[in-house]
Every structure is written in C-alpha cells, then in structure tokens.
Image 1: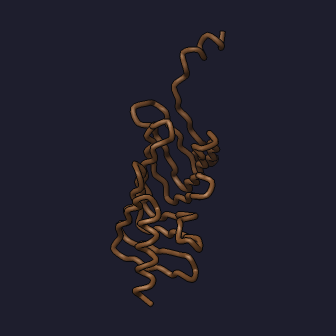
Image 2: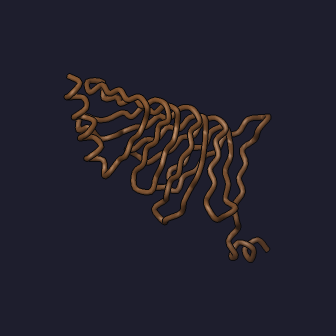
Image 3: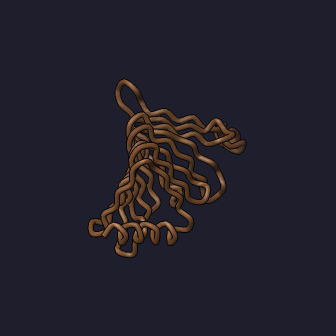
Length: 158
C-alpha cells in the first residue's frame, strides 16, 4: 500500500511539468485525493515558488493537482504570463489550479518586483489569467494599493 501511494505521488510530480516538492513530513491518501506536506515545505514549478509550514494538495483521479492550500508563514513568488515577478506573503494561501485564482488570507501582501506596485489587505483575491484583483481590508487596517500611473493617464486627468 505504501509503495502504491509513493508511486502515485511520483507519477503526480512527473506529470505536473516538473513540480518539485520538499518537506520534512509527507503523507498521501490516494483514495481521498490528498497529499499533505508539513514543516519547511517548498514547492517549485517553472519560475513559481511557494514556502509554508503546511501545504495540502488536492489531486484529481488522474493525479493532477486541482487545489493547493498553504498555512503558516506563507511566502511565494509568481511569474505572470507577461513575465512580471510578484512576491508576496500571507497567513494562508489558497490556489485553484483549475481556474488560476489565488486567495491570500491574513496580513496579505503582494509586491511587483522592480516597481512601486503594492497591494496589502486582510484578503487578496487575484487571477492573472483574467486580470482580476479584489482586496479587502478591516476597519483598523484598510486595504492599500500603490501603483505607478501610466504617462498617458496624466494627460487624460486634465
């Protein structure tokens, strides 16, 4: 049984376009479609990176990841389709691999490298595929956005 679960996980990683996963503890349940990684978790795929204390990966019947849930000191790097590098952190991160949506919860922050572009809030939902961002703050800590205006925007504002 253990061999079968390990084989399932190896197939998952091979089929996921070089998904590299590291953790101190690893547990997989093929019937439930769940892989649990705990302590010092690192996940890398293409140029994207995820670091957390705990990550749960839900997989479909073909052993392909459908959802990622990361908890505890979550840090990440995502490279967008137009090659912008976004660096962020949150208490929790949820990623829906089926629709490309990220949901950051608790002291969430996303910064675009080499720019002044910054988003902070209690919850940030973003989807690079459709160009969607939704930021929620609290009364004590409102959402914050900083971004550079395009040159053409100054002329349009007059």
